[in-house]
Image 1: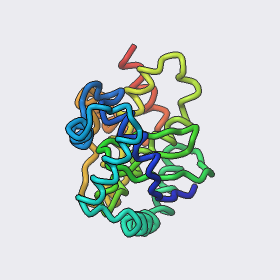
Image 2 (image 1 turned 60 degrees about the horizontal axis):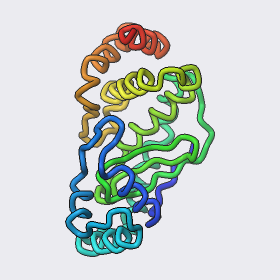
Image 3 (image 1 turned 45 degrees about the horizontal axis):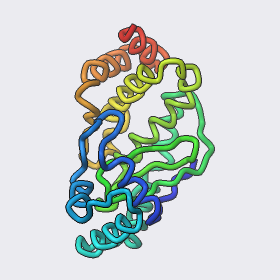
Image 4 (image 1 turned 180 degrees about the vertical axis):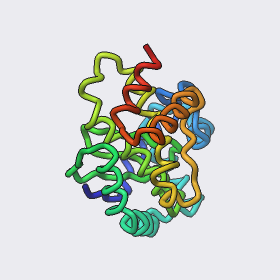
Length: 214
């Protein structure tokens, strides 16, 4: 698996317009940058206006996307091999794809497995915690996702809860961050941690979480 960090203005605009207003797990919860877009223009569906806003935002906030891209890549490359080895041991699978990490000013970082990309912040020098969170979603999908399509909400709740394992198995790579997840998954995250500590078996963790939602 290879992760390549990049900045693409069109992707940044797409993320801002689609995810700035809210997300599946945080409906109606606008990001700060999206609120600034609303103050900038009432034509939020106008891509040209959004492009103008993004360029203005990057200029006024001195966002050095070229320099930051290199720093994010170096920081990720320093842990990439060990992260992959640990993730493979946990999930028992290998991901051979090249995946792109697009930088965004949105303040929300969605992922797209079929298109092989996810988002990270364009305003932080280290995105390893975000990258690992999103990549755990990739591993979870390839391990369990195809068998869970009949109940997408249950799948969402369980896969979001599994990111609690970052605080146990990858804490030395988190750069001081803690993966807290969403408040609605707090109980499931506790269960995931307890079962993982008990069994060290991702299948048992998955089954325990799924069963608790029946």
